[in-house]
Every structure is written in structure tokens, then in C-alpha cells.
Image 1 (cartoon, rainbow, N blue to C red):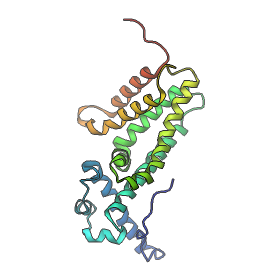
Image 2 (image 1 turned 60 degrees about the vertical axis):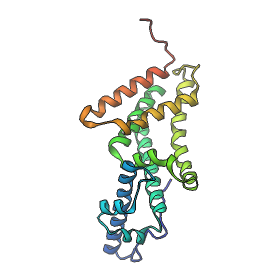
Image 3 (image 1 turned 180 degrees about the vertical axis):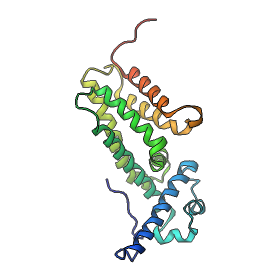
Amino acid sequence: MPPATSSRGKDPASTRGGASSKSERTRERIVDATARVLNSRGYAGTRLSDIAAIAEVQAPAIYYYFSSREELVEEAVSVGLQRTMLLMREALDEVPESATPLQRIRVAVAAHLNTLLTHSEHSAAAVRTVAQLPQEMRDRQLTAHRAYIDVWRGLLEDARAAGEIDPDLDLRAALMIVLGALTWTVEWWDPDQGSLDRVIATAQSLIENGLSATAPSAA
């Protein structure tokens, strides 16, 4: 899915090299700054003045690139959802064909957490705030969001077909619980209080054991 583009997002001098590059870099800084503000303040708390301060532009200059605050926020969310899907696809594409479905789920867990917590502020902003968007905007972004959820659904369905997931589990509920728990890490993870590797390993173990068709041994 290509990133959203603004009708006002291109420099009129787009064919003149340097001018275009400078304009595109400014536009990218504005979108990056929007992701940072969305992450820290949510949709309702995102103000153009805060975005402008982070992007190091005057607030009125934002309207040269975006017609409204809503258009800018939507682009930041769209870019984030696209990056989330891209990084997940890249991680899964590197998994050996011999890997079991549960092993692929472990890779997906690591990719999701790495993306949200270290690789992309856009991704974290998108995943955290898509539900806060106005209905019309949310409807447009839900297509990309559902596509990401469908990747996870496919992973769980493959594991169930392989007999690796407890057949008594409600697969939809399991999917939502897994994604909800993983995404919630952005609210509490503090790199000063524990390494990301340990968080990922813990999440992988909890999810694999919780989904597994193998009954735990009696204490």
C-alpha cells in the first residue's frame, strides 16, 4: 500500500533538483514530527504548534504542504501503517521454509515489538492512534490496518492447521489478545528498566505457551 500523498505535498519546482529536495526534506520532517506528537499526546492532543516546533518550521508553513491538521495526521498514520506492514513482511520473508508455524509466530512477535519500540515512531503512532481518529479518516485507514491483522490471522490459522495451536481456543479472541498485549508495550516499556531482547523473549514464550496445543505438565 503506497503512502498517502497530499495534493499540496509537492513543491511546484519538483523538477528542479535542489529546490525539490529541500521541500521534500521539510515535508518529511513535518510528517516525522507529527508521528512524535501523536505518540506522546494522541490524536486529540496533537497541535500544529507542537509539530512545527519539533520540525523547526513556522506553524503557518505547514499549510504549504498540507491543507489541514487532519490531512497531516492522516498521512503520518498512513506512513506508519505502511512501514509496519513492510517491516513485518521483511521479517517473515527471511524465515527459512523449514520453520514451523509457531516459529514464524515467534518471528512476528519480534518484528512487531522491534517495529513499535525502536524502528519506527510512525508505526507506533499509527497503531496507537488509529482507533482515535474521526470515523471517516479511520475508515480509510482501516483497510491497511485490517491487512496487517490478516497477516497475523494467517499465521495463527497456519499454526492451527499444523496442529500446533490448541483447537479449543477461540482463534479470533486469541488474535486480538496477542496483538493487544504486544501493542500495549509502547505504554509501559522503559529501556532503562530492561532490555528489549528480554521483553521480546518473554513475549515469545508467553504467546507460544499460551497458544500451544501441548498441555502443560502437572506441577
